Image 1 (cartoon, rainbow over the protein chains, first blue to last red):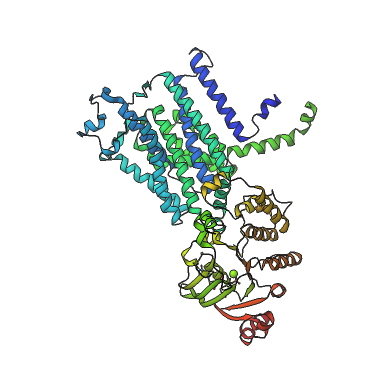
Image 2 (image 1 turned 135 degrees about the vertical axis):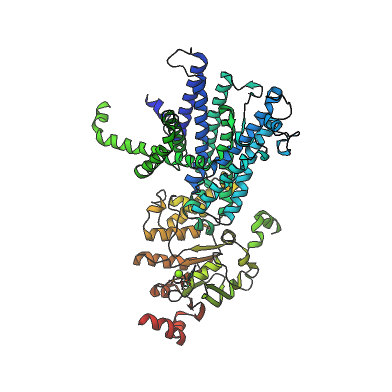
Length: 373
Length: 267
Ligand SMILES: Nc1ncnc2c1ncn2[C@@H]1O[C@H](COP(=O)(O)OP(=O)(O)OP(=O)(O)O)[C@@H](O)[C@H]1O
Ligand SMILES: [Mg+2]
């Protein structure tokens, strides 16, 4: 037992272990157990879990810039949505002539708008490879341009946060318009299959879930490497004393741009994994409140730890699923309340609670341990 | 020489030309804040390898002068050169630091969330680009450098402690250590002994004097006994311009200085 617990000594090992166990369990329970078994995991639950893991990846990307570099982005929803749209465009094209209008070349909404050719920016959208490129490029490029403009002119703090909100809001308005060519307020939906596999089938859903878990683990691993590298220390130095870092010889703006861009790409990947699992992407994903919710996940989980972000996203998303089933109107109030409570009582978030509890427990029962030995 | 220059890449033309013996040139430099002239047509030359003390009343413009050299403040007019050929007014803070001008602030600023060791690590003279930083591993020589500096600044035992937990005096020392790690040609040191005990002050004096020669050192300090203990050449600033320059004895007997500075202090 002791050896087994030693496998969970560091945060990396803990995240790896728990993700592996959950993924394995879900895979086996969904694939092998009979549906009437108590331990069975339904296709619906698999997809729900897959969705949570996408949120966890998104939260990870927010924590990387906020927790480690002090960049409070209130616009990460935009990067998530852009990745989602890139995936959505590909899935739209996979429908082919199976749409309502039976047009093999044009998605339904374009036929409806009386368009007769694909807009130029849809070129290549039927290629899986091109889609993957766009999932990285669209959010990455936007973040890069935004970052260069903001960080080179030394915008920071509240002003930066407001700019990121404005960015996602502007995109929300733009994507609502039919003329933009992204399906207007209905967005992109009615997807049929991905790489030839039906999105309705249980095995595709399970595969998507497993892929999401693997990507999340990989992203966590890479982020962890980054924050523990010399570059990670520099980023923290910039967070705490940007001026000093400049006089030590670091071009702080380029570090911030790079980190922000990488984080946006992670958010975009999360969006791309999210869309085939929920079956729709619409402009609502750009709404400012979404981006604020992500920051709250990180704050509740514990910022500046990476795994705290994952914990926060999972806990809050689960609570949201439960809560909105009972009282959908009250969710935002509950979320706000939770946020205030955590900030006041647990400045280090939920994961900050663990060391405190452990110390308390040792204080309370120091004897029992010795007796046990 | 050619080969070495190409290896150095972007910094190749950032080696100051000091054939005339001067490493820092400031000519006719003026800085004004909302009409108030913090520096007023200032001329100052720092020789290569010298230790120079800058004194002057509060608000005389000493810190502003360092801000101008390090790129934090842009002057309204004037010329600031590093060696004969490098125009510092064309470089940003990071480039100036990489070129070899290090600075210690009046208020000690270290990276509080990082360990003492990491503070020195980040300050080492090396490629400061992102790609290099992502993959960087300390080599033996760099580790030795850090160890030596830790010993010099007396923080070997605190090496793995957070810099934020150091005492005020220790932070001052760490900041000096960070300067040393960068192996700069010029060290600008703003009030290094503020808040130090007498013993710490003495050690700082020893350290700074030992640095001169290999480095050029400019020290701003209010503590006159400290200045007396290290000074070779002293420059007196007054209302943004140089009032007098010379040895401590010359300065003390200088009529203008007696009038505006030492006179003020004694009242
Ligand atoms: N950013 C700024 N904006 C407005 N005024 C400034 C600014 N920086 C400095 N000053 C003013 O310029 C003058 C020179 O300031 P400086 O800090 O260079 O003085 P100092 O010689 O370093 O003084 P001290 O001994 O108190 O550190 C002061 O009157 C100060 O109020
Ligand atoms: Mg000053």
